[in-house]
Figure 1 (cartoon, one colour):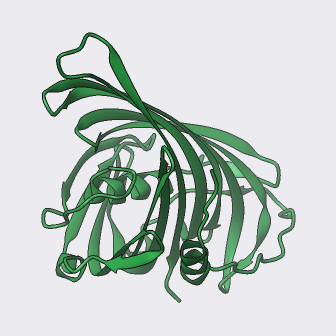
Figure 2 (cartoon, rainbow, N blue to C red):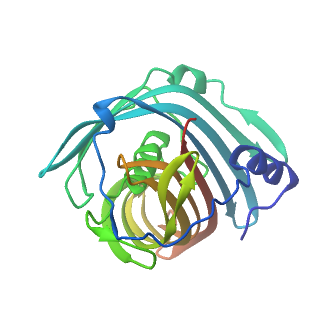
Figure 3 (tube, one colour):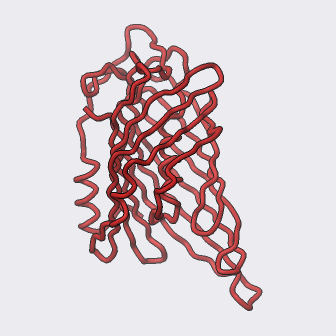
Length: 287
């Protein structure tokens, strides 16, 4: 199911915008894409998230905007460490057409995050976001959702020369709490270089992405054994400044079909609940 409801459509149009596509073309010579130190200075980003959940006909929406800064703390053959400082949070839930801002969101300002990954993009460790609470309408913990989106965004480019039409593939796994179940998410991303051109005054590669996310896990909810499964697909675009090795803009839209099964109290049979979750993400370098 796609995004529905006048309030959500207007909100998403305001937050994520339509944007303008810069003209792209083939490079005169293949260009190497690789993350750089970017002077080891903090760069300012703005993240906009929108989620629309339809749980057996009950529609709920969730919107969030976060201002944060990010820098490369360490980059070597063993991987990369990044540090993040979060400046401002807004979170709004929409139910039955009524927006309800989260009064706790402003208190999350000042949170920090340390994220360590290996050369292939797998997360080795992360710490921080301790005071960030709440969940998305997809039932994920908000702080884990933030980490997951950053890990997805910062999957490494191939580190070799590419040109228009070049492709590569990355995969990574993360465990996230969804509902009351610890769920293993396996994310596969296929990348294609669409071309090269200017984006916000920077020389960039425009890279399209295709995402496939498979998730499953088991746990206990209300004293009953519970199983969770999800299949998610989508597409996205990355604008990558190949001169200094930083991401200028990352966007993605996905749709997930989820099923949660649990034992019925005092019964031997299993009940199932199905949901469709549409998500939209935009993270861009502040100008």
